Length: 410
Image 1 (cartoon, rainbow, N blue to C red):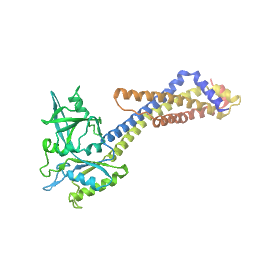
Image 2 (cartoon, rainbow, N blue to C red):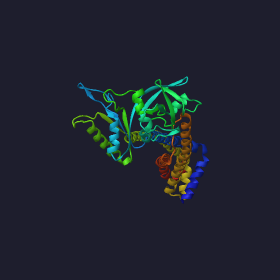
Image 3 (cartoon, helix red, strand yellow):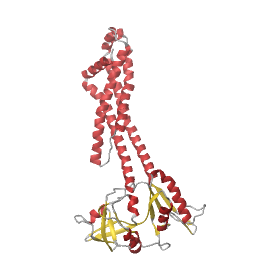
């Protein structure tokens, strides 16, 4: 018997029992739909992590003040400002793989415009900061080196602060008070969104580093050149690891640390953070897909049960076909093809259900769900494999029926 004839007979047998065939495929539909949806949710989680890391800036290494020992007591990380503006200049000057090194300070501040006020994050930076963060303005301008040199009272606003203080007014050129100090708004930054810790990066005001030290945040009594951290942008991703080692060695030399002493600073490589968080997201995606695959297996068991019932009901038909010359492989092929057709048809419908479900989750729960061929194809192939695996036993049982016994079956 030809393959086309086998498929035609299988389709005819399924058409005779449409409701049963639909119910048989239902388990596969639910299973494939669940797998596609879970894979889309997992892919969306990975994309969100990558987007958050990119919003911080590419090829970034962050130097933070570390812990120190005072009176035999090990103080916590950041307990004293141990990195300086001079460290930033030395890093940019002496390490060729570094594009820019931007010193920065950070603190909390209350900002006021008219009757509106807002508590936000205040950052004192140099112009290199915007290049390191790959951050531009949507209106106005960024801070310039002249602003830093003159300790100018100018400020650049994040989108959240601008929207809160200036609902219908153009912020550029307006005067706001930051910790009771008047500042002129010279620019509004482009939107960055949330960081990997869930922090709103747009909820910030940025002023010159010199102004922050002299007029707002103050300076460290131990060292007036000290800063909270340094943002370092490396030219090439491939040089991140080697640059990190060079930065650590340079800072240890500048801070006169002995080989036996621990670093008094901390380095954060954002690419490594990205890799670890994406790995965690991939594990989550696989776990969700594995859980969803259980329903596919349940659907396969349903296919096997219905096919066994079908074999029992069609015993006389099988005996008649064997009596007129059909081979065992013909009977095996027909029932196996029936199982595979049910499974693949359920898989196709399940893909549609999964795509619709993914977009529905994205719409109602505001969660990014990315449907891709990498999520659809494995689910469809798995559905076909389920049809073959669970359909083989009923098909084999049908092919092994003896013609005389089958014809006598009531």
